[in-house]
Picture 1 (cartoon, helix red, strand yellow):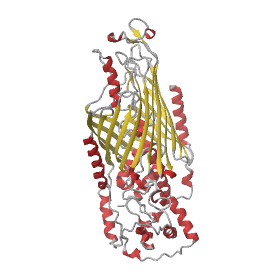
Picture 2 (picture 1 turned 90 degrees about the vertical axis):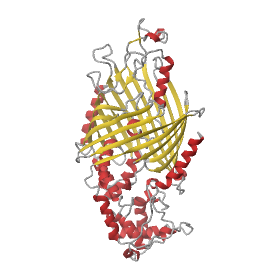
Picture 3 (picture 1 turned 180 degrees about the horizontal axis):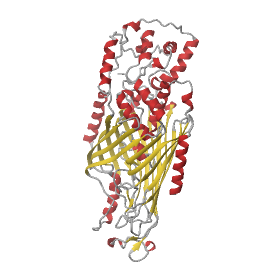
Picture 4 (picture 1 turned 135 degrees about the vertical axis):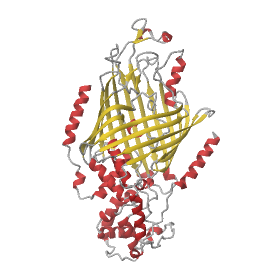
Length: 91
Length: 539
């Protein structure tokens, strides 16, 4: 069992570093719209979609790191979501 | 009970206005009279519709009623574009609002060209409902734009370079005997979450649980079993919690070595299954208590563990994603004597042997099926104490979980399913028969007069569904959520600490914001029924 888990982990690391980039990022959809789409989808995997005005920009940067850790999202996805939120929390 | 119900209802009614913000949004005078340079023809409206469905519909709804799936969590709520209130706005006013945004409405000027924004205005005009009764006076008072941008500046400057954040939740609750309603108790908790991001690649997170618990149903279930058999025997591991409790939920350092990998070290939430890592915070869990077998104490499945963890994304596309979390940790420890012999102690802060637990979870996500996620977890954990007969005893932990949120247009609702099947299998081992339990051990379990063994496997299951009519127009009912949960636990049948339970829980929740809610639930179980209510504020 332990060897199987080690094997899975090793394969995981290899695959991670050669995984295909997300096709949507290559399309013509701009980052703000892509960020909104991810904000709607990724947040709901665990909890309600947050209101962008709940925190300020600097606080969202910190929360982005927390969510990247907890929800296994990539750096690119985290940046798109946080940039969208920052654009949507003008008071 | 009556007192409690009355106070709960008052509480909900009184709290609602406290979460509501002002919706006043005046247009600057220079934009009020701005003429739309693009005529409202088929091409313009089609282009407007296309972009509207992409960018506006998630909040304002496909028909512009202000009832998109994300609308329930936004404060103030998105505008109803069919209303006279919006339609009275001049073209220039609508154009300015689309371009600049306010509150949680993004500024779309960076995303759409000027022509596309005017096309959106033309499309919004087609949404007008002549029967709309929403005739709130148009807030056409011009303001000095310099003044409002000064406000923005002062708000963000004060928080610049702020890399530290304290957030979290607080809750207060009432637990009552659900059969007789003759006993009920208050409880309260405070769960601050400390987040610190010293640099782009470094991060630290820690969660504390401070609580005064009236009663912890899951651990009491273990405790009551112990009490029934009690005759002066010391019972390790089956703690019932009552009174004040301060607990470290997790505290771990995080390093992001690449764009897709996350390295974690310290005391982290176990990634086994989804409940512990994803659902346990009070503002995420749809019920006031945990499913059977989970919790901070007396739990039968890991909660937090000390070690290192590597997480990341294995594959990422529009149709399929694969994520993983792998860890090496102290793992649980085997309780090898006394009443609870064979049970695992998950608070193994100082490892009882030199072998570490190795495990992880792989998650399969299908973004095109409303982000359906299916997860498989496994861990192999040497649990026996070093230099004892139990040194080679190992536990195999496994879990299968799923999570799915989808919209049901016929009910204008959002439906969320979550579930997890967990099991723990421990190698056969020979335990000493405690003096006071000689009669409890069956002859077929006995190895000799003083030792016994049993098949040590336990299983836990929970399944929950919640329905919230997020897209209906009534601002009270769209915040109500109906929740259902089925959970069961089967501890090893021949263990002295054997037990089983099966519960059904029905709940009604009222959401104030995306992270604050009031929960009421009624739970029926094999051992007792519970009436449980909880008020949670996320901050």
